[in-house]
Length: 131
Image 1: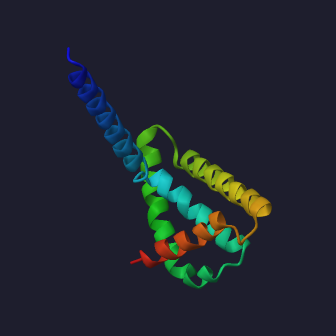
Image 2 (image 1 turned 120 degrees about the vertical axis):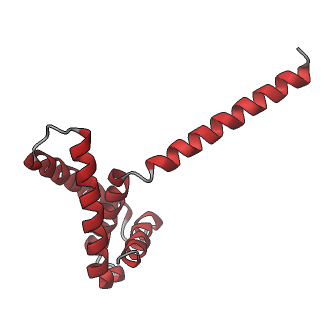
Image 3 (image 1 turned 45 degrees about the horizontal axis):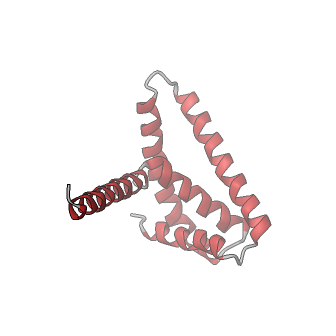
């Protein structure tokens, strides 16, 4: 094989690998579990820091309820033999875990840190997605 053919093949394989990785990452971000976690983290940060974004709480809550319902459906499909109580317990554990993670993050970084401010912005964005 010629040197140019080998280089072109390596570049093409790298490009296809990168595209596959990017598509996989984007599809994970569309999962109800991922979105629900983002919402819980945004809510926790806004509540802990008493963010001005809390003025949109009613709208945010509607979005959170829709996402929670989608997430519960996903959990019930993942393990069809699970009871409603088991699904609710799993959801409660994940919410508590996300809230404690954010509380720890706020304690170490403070409410003015860009990572925490990103939660406030996410809160506003999801509140505006409310129907």
